[in-house]
Length: 285
Image (cartoon, rainbow, N blue to C red; front, side, top):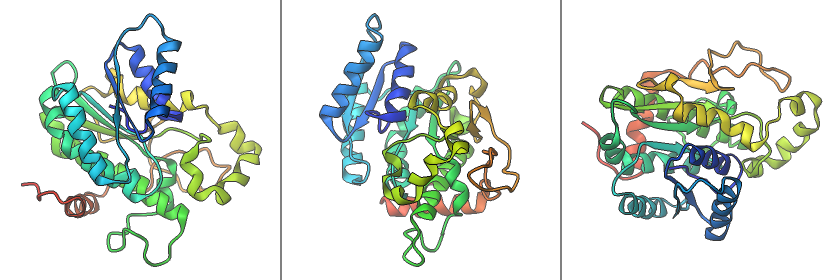
């Protein structure tokens, strides 16, 4: 399953996974747009008859996430080997909706895992995670709101989620990775348009810019590469594992390493426990 699968990196991720012969499910909020994406994938690979299914899901509505998960499980027969969380704007959509979706699909992921292919969760994060630590006492930025920092926190949360999934479930055949897809012009930056639009005029930024297909490459690498079989809890970019960020920040910097606070089990566990409460799930034993 690929969330946000009707445009940009999402549709290119779905296209690449479909090329492997996999049965692909994409979540969409706009049915017409989703069908157009599916038609385009089939058009680009007309001899590939592997099915692509569309699940209606609005990621900023937890009830819609629950309904979409239920529809998926019914359609798939409770079979799921891969969940790619590829989304959108702030904490609720980037992170919390995917946290709930993971828990709703976790039994299927665990049951579908095999020795040949352990089930995987791929969290599409961003190098923007370096702009903010998790505000454990103020997730919603009720004080000192800044759109870029709020976006950064949501992407930091996806890294913590991947780390925690891998710690909790790696020993039973379910692993998780997080990644930075690259600098891609998309609607993901709509909420900070005034901040980011001037950035695209800089030659150093244009030199790093990726197409949607190029941006999907690291996601697909995380999803299918044998490098990550029975392995996870790592942060990737440019189809490789990243080390820690070396401390030089700015648009001209090529360092895509992870923030110093990216591996903090205490904060990861706190976020996990709080997230269970936020989506109305029972504390895990």
